[in-house]
Image (cartoon, rainbow, N blue to C red; front, side, top):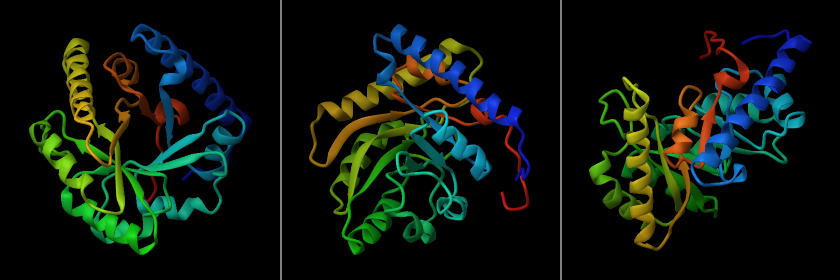
Length: 245
């Protein structure tokens, strides 16, 4: 991780956030919504605490997302999270569930029924209800986690019956597409699934969040119906990896 920061590093974060917020607002209006209808998550994978706290304290970031439990644990004690929510957005292994349940507002990456049960077990042990999103492998890619779109409705209903968790929406990582119209169609299919599940009005399913869109495609995702975009490198610059990441 980067240890030394200068003023330009912070200036870049501020300027990047201004550009991103303007683009989010424009895309939201184009999609028939208002700028406040789409949430911006700052993805903090490999980003050091001073830059994260600057984004929160000085730039108004009120939602961050971490990919790995271990990295969140290493930073959490120093982060200014009193007015900022944190989500886990990366794949969660069952042996790490105990360490993250109750420490983040939402676990976005529930990709199997078994991990949902593991999350619920630890939530019940702590006397809480853990909010979760169901991860959808919208591009049917073997290299990615998540439910196939054809099984998502059924699996979401099954997960919603588990005590200790509450389903609050869906999440996906879009595949790389040859053109923007193809990408938009994928996001629109995800939005349709989101609406279809919501229309069933099932117990313990409250479709509040449709988390899709990252640094390279968040504008298209908003046009396709996203109401939460996960943006990292476009805010903080290229990720800086160390032996710990």
